[in-house]
Length: 192
Image (cartoon, rainbow, N blue to C red):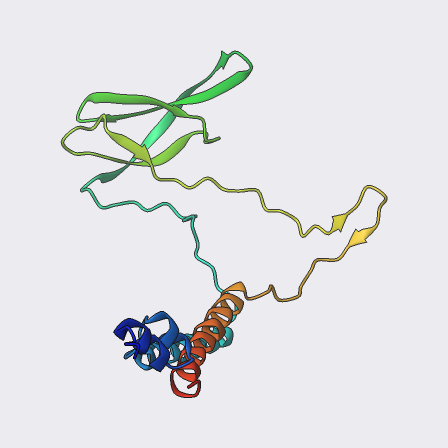
């Protein structure tokens, strides 16, 4: 009479599903399947909300200057002089901003912003030589231009909606998670 090794006997009793063959998640494969399915459904609902919102993007650049209130006082200064210095092939244009306060004159060379006459500034009351220009640079008004090629043909602007990449990515992840969850549940319950 031959005695069967208990290890081989246990292998013969295992089911044909992937959990029984590998021994991985033999008892809790259904829990993992349910968790993946739930996360997939949550991702699907989030994807549908993103689709309703339309395409979105994060604005990486702030176009407006952020001026912190540091107790600086507003004042008016004069543009006294302009100068241009050459450094190799580059030119640096500067202007001399000057104002007088309590009988003392404070001045600073700053990049030439195209101002003439007087400008509004804010200065530090503890150190009046610490000041900055608060006037905004006026950009030239651009006329409404059409895109014209070198041949004189007018190119129409693309007004179609951009592809909502966030929705597509989230939808793909939702389908993937739900598919893996369903596969785990199918394998755990139906393959014997």
